[in-house]
Image (cartoon, rainbow, N blue to C red; front, side, top):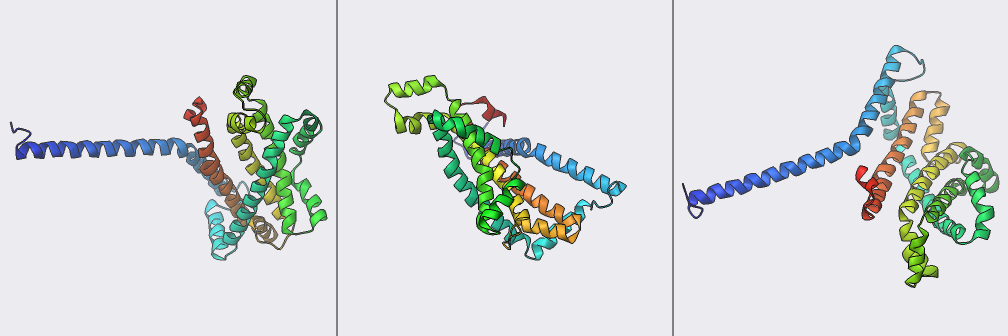
Length: 291
């Protein structure tokens, strides 16, 4: 048997190490594939199921106006090639990002204000909760009458749709902070603005992230409604959707709807999902391990 110091022993030892490294790489790759499948497998399965049912309904002729999924994909490709879909998508995303940033800048301080001052909370909190039940279609005529068919009217609809949701969610998150934690902070000198910055907001951070997540969803839906109903000359996904409606064909309408849905899913799973998991994991919450 060759010793470790002999050339044969060195070769066998090197082969063992290479084999161990290759095994470790395979195990890591398999673990990543399992995590990927656990995270995206259910969603992909749901998409395939919907597409299969959709194709079956089309083949059976149960709906005379429903096109095949392949026809909708062709309409989607045609809209992209014609230069209508890309610019519309970019303009809509830009408007929603700007409106969401403004909604967060207004809604988070407003929720904090309602939590800190009862005389402000008494009249405003029920009003904001009731405002959330208003469909975005109701807000569009108000914005158009006030600001005309302009981009400002679209932004106003996004703000009116998202700010109540953000403020109410932040208020709920702050209300759920344990009073014992706040008292402990005061004992250690964290009062006033310092208590809000170092105790209250960090403790309510998971709820604040959830409020922003919900605010984005409300703002995105409000934006699509505003672009569809405000009849502005500005490009956007709502304009692409309206063009499909005017054509009288269901295919272009479904193609635009798929893009709108895809944007919502990507932002939800690619932005807010990881942020919320990281916040929960940092606090050792078991819900972070289940996602």
